[in-house]
Image (cartoon, rainbow, N blue to C red; front, side, top):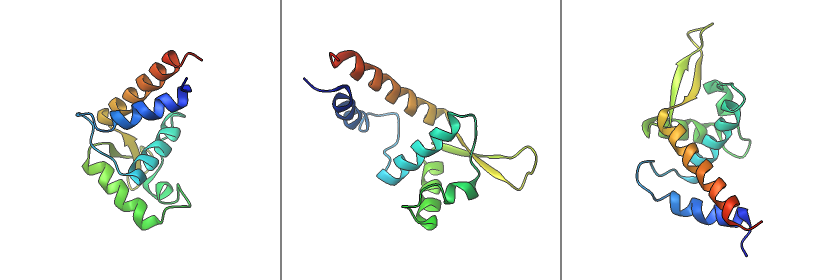
Length: 115
């Protein structure tokens, strides 16, 4: 019998190819998930904070992947209400759809794992 996590991974691999959400490379997916941990705590990181979000990824690579996530419609910039020069990274409706899909997969995996 598969664990819920193994079932989730299997479902997630299939979901990555479904239409409606753009394909993300592993670094984009990693960054998006890291941004989600901020958003889940009602905080939108600044672009400068994002450049140092992951020690394993160079700042240049992070900037390119942020640009990629923006062009794919997964994130948007919002001006900080206190300082218009500061840009914060926020999810788009498409990103919300992406996370909702994975939430459904996780629930399905847990429900059907028999655990």
